[in-house]
Structures are given as structure tokens and as C-alpha cells.
Image (tube, rainbow, N blue to C red; front, side):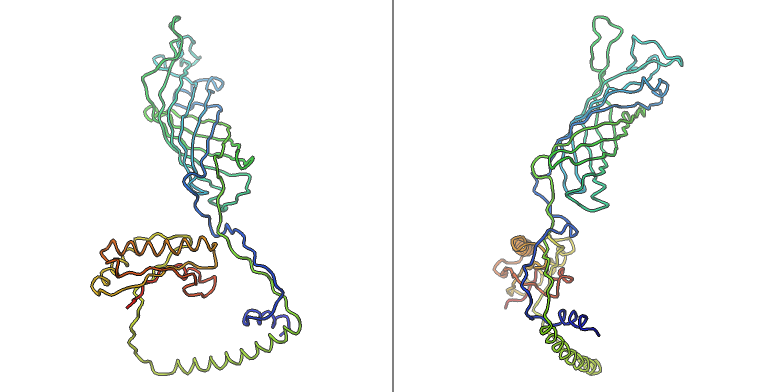
Length: 394
């Protein structure tokens, strides 16, 4: 085996050797997900406008040039996560198309088309609520420096409609048509990040304007989105350890230690084989630990499954009358010390409050936190260190 390979193995197996001092660097790692922001963050205002093209069963009878109208909207919204959000606001349209002679929105001062249908024009204004999905963040992961994002949206609302009295020379203004239209809409927004505050987008949107008459349209709009306050997302912080370099003398010493430990490993393997061949013995153990509750990364809430387990633990506690110690843990491989301290305390508080809610006497419970790892088996086993232990304190 080459000396360089032996040195690499020795570096993994033997610790404590002298090395060139380098500082550990802590950097955000978005591959682990993102941290949820406060409720007041990630709000935005959107203004847009463009054209709409009617495609109802009568509207297709009109020439193409007579089916283009106006559309505009103003929204206020919020991103709950980098992927999902919502918006609500006002939607305005002034579509054009064709209708029959007795159509409610017929332009009375215009002659019929060659096919016998008449020009149509009306105005609609009303509230709208949409759900937003950032498809790019969903499929490719969150990237705060990404310029382009594809955003899908869908929602519903209602239009109050207006029409014009073209046949009355004394009153040709707009007036209410006494006809409210429910509508549903879906679209794709091509969003371009100009800065941390302003985004430019082009939106293609399909709308079913009236469920009763199956009137629908296709609109093409452009607009600007203005972010209010914090608009990005924080990622968990991870440590980047330095690469250690050894001198030849240090490498020789490590190889010697590695050879000695290989001999010890061989002896341990022989002892393990001897233990495997030893007759099994049944040993009755009195385990002081009642239960260990585990949590996902950056979480401290109790799932329904954990509540079912803790409800049974509460019954044991009430019947025994003994005292118990609750200890909160968070792994030291991810997150900052400040975040981990909050997680430890929030986790043990949650278990304590739930046991008390199930009738356990608070005097039976002693809650604390431990800044050390519960198992300390390494970063790959970090989920085992995100926990709360419940042990017998008597």
C-alpha cells in the first residue's frame, strides 16, 4: 500500500495528531432546506396590464381584430415558503366579441357582421384570490441568486359587470348590468428578477369568465412585482472543516499508530467471535428511560404519533407517582448555537406541557436541556441527536 493511502487511512482512524492550524468556516447550505421566515416577511405588491382575447361560443363569430380587449389587475400577496404562496386583489377586463341580436352586451350602435352576429363589449371588475406555485424552486431547489422563475397560479373570483346604452343619445355612459359573473383562472408567469426589490414578469392566463354561458378568454399581460421588506430565505448553517496536512515524520508516526490499532482490531474481532459462540443468557434489565421523542431538523412540534405515545407515558407516570427528568437535545452538526439552544428548550417545553395536559402532576417532572449530543455518532446519525428523553429520576 502506498504511503499516501496509509496516511489518509490514519487520518480517519487516529485523532489528536498535530496539524497546521486552520479555522472552521461556517456557510449556509440550502441543500438542507430553508428556515421559515416571520409572518411579516415575503409580502409583495403586483401591478399588471395587457390584452384579452374572447373565445366564447358566440365570440368566435367575430373577426379576430374585433375580439381583442383590455385587462389589468392589482394584487397584494405573500410567499409562505420559497415554493408556495398566495395573492388577492382586483381584476379588471374590457373584452370584445360577438353576440346574438338580443345579447345583453350588444353594441347597439354597431351593425351586424356578415354572419348575422353583432359586436359585443362589456366591462368587468371584481375581487380575485390565487394560489401561487414557484415551479422552478419546486423542481430545481431554492437559489436566492436565480434570475428566472416560472410561477404557476390558479384561483377564482367574481366580476361585477357594466355595459353602455349606445341606443340612447342622452346617456351613452357605462352603467351596471345587474349581472355578476363567477370566474376561475389559471396561468403561467415568466418572472425575471431585476433586483432584490423589483421583478418583471410576462403572464399568459386562461379564464373561464362565466360558468353559465361557458365564456372564456386568453390574456397576455406584463407587470412588475415590488417586494416589501425581507424577500429571501435563510438556509441552515453548516461547518466546513479544513483539510489537514501532515509532515513525513507525523505521517510515519500515524502509520505506526495505525498498525498498532489494526492489531487491536484483530484481537477485538477474535473476542467478538468468541462472544457470538457463547450461549445466550437472558438478563432482566431495569431500564430507567421511559421514552425518547425524535424530531425532524429545525422542528419542535409533536406529531400525532408522538402524542399517542406520550399519552401512554402519562398514564404510567400518574399510576407510579414517581419523579421523571425531561431532557431536550439538538444536534451540534447543523445550525448555530443560538438556534440549537432555542430548539432544545422548545422541544422539552412541548413534551412537558403535553404531559401536564394529560393529567401528570407538574411536581413529578423536572425539565432541562443538554448542550451535548445525545448519541454523538457523527453527522450521518444527526437525527438521533434531535430528541427529548424521558427518564426515571427516583
